[in-house]
Length: 206
Image 1: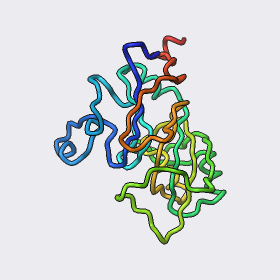
Image 2: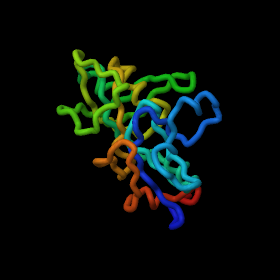
Image 3: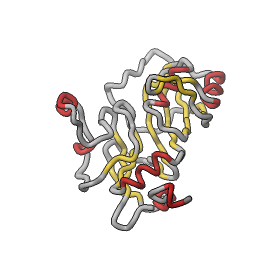
């Protein structure tokens, strides 16, 4: 549970920003952009999970480390919009929904069943970063995918496994917290969410 002295922020993490505040790698520290460049965050705050550098959208941050660990391990739904290279087929959507084999930590891993829907119309989103290579003369398509896992680059690996690499990936929901109409780099306070009532240790519920 998040106590009164703790709080949750939600951020629209822009493309090209790492989901961390610093790095021990000197080269990375010089060349990469970190969360601290986006906002004057309070001391002790940390990201809840992560989005890879080339993904964007909803990222939660909190001052409660135990709560953060619980959220990451609790199987809460995470919803994404993915723009794919090519016009995705019904067969590929079925495979994604049932689970596909991807590489994770040097081993083969089969993803858990998930919800996948093809978007008939392009979603209303901020314009993509200019670094994202969207082929103007190549067909592409959008899917909405809801997973309960959080393996490294999972959605990208999943769509590539069925032959439709992800061009742009935006997380739009974690549990009942939505990205809504936020803009890249925008930060707001999460006030009303069932996530706030989740105990900070799974052991407390046993």
